[in-house]
Image 1 (tube, rainbow, N blue to C red):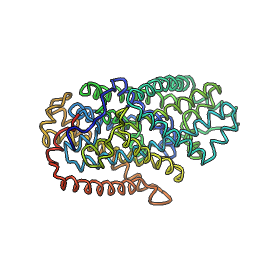
Image 2: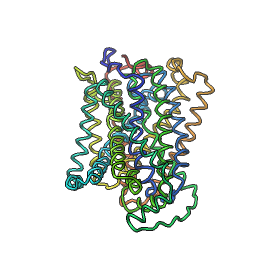
Image 3: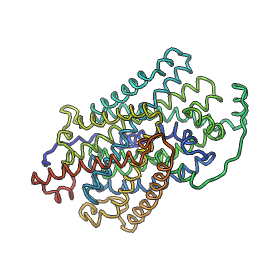
Image 4: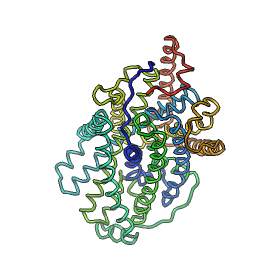
Length: 493
């Protein structure tokens, strides 16, 4: 690629970067997954929060690895750039293609899942006609596509417009999420059992749960998805102000604030609602934090909680679209993808073609959720993809000083080699274990067809990625590009 290739302008400050990470993390991962996990991992019972805390450990190691690499390579593309310069371009592309595909699918899953929240808001407000329309499959898919492409357009309009959209929504999301925490801590299980009896005439038998290590570890591997999203900060490295300082800071702030919010939120809901009820309901229908708390709260608070959940889900979309589109832009800039995908919008200086391509793949995620009938397939694909990606980031921390001493000398945090090795090895071992657990769970799960298992789907995608890479690599070589030189330095700004 030419040294004069266009690049996005650096307009994202620390708050915008942190909001990108936070809004990529909070959404389905807190309002849905900690409760629907009772169906996806039967028997987890009261151990959701401990499994959640265990899931945080590999995420912390991955965040530290990202921070180290981001301080040395502050460019668009994040994980692709890090692995391609620290290990090999093929490894970088496969890692990031896995991430791009997994996250793009989940963007579609989120857009699809958010519609029932608005349906429930309509029901809570007694807008029966509107709620009925939102049950119609064609309208649900159409509305999900509308949400998705609205935020595709927000991304095309540039970083400043993106920040002005994202930050107010993030603040509102935390405020409305705070209602859940206060409400959950205000009630006990006995209050819920009484409300259940009064409203539906039902009784609830509080049968104790048996602890199972395989079940517990499977749940932790799935709950790892709750911490996926801070990596979006690294993908926006080409648009960050003062990137060597702000990228690591934003990653740290995002994972710390979201981790604390998750713990408080999950604890509060299970403090008010017995896990036995959550497990029973999850087996029969899709449930959310707002739905199960509705037995205890007045309808006005229930509406606010539902709106909070809907906003949290919608917030995922612009931040994640930014993340995945910058991977495509980075591939194209390096010549691994068609050069047309590196073109910038003439006015807004955003990678318009890359954003649109990511929107198309996310649209497939919406259609897949509709026809598969279970959004957990999309989440499982994302977990597999991101575990592989985070594993390669930890390996990149170990190999960068060996494979690329010049770039390793640019690391600005955790500069002691012994500390880097500790982070790299610790993350590699933990994430490898989680990847094995998640893969075994997926392959042993009962599904109606092989393509409802995330592992074979992921392997097929990786096969496609490999074919794309070697086709483009051959073209690069034939065009006379000095690949060794190009892939040992950072792209021009």
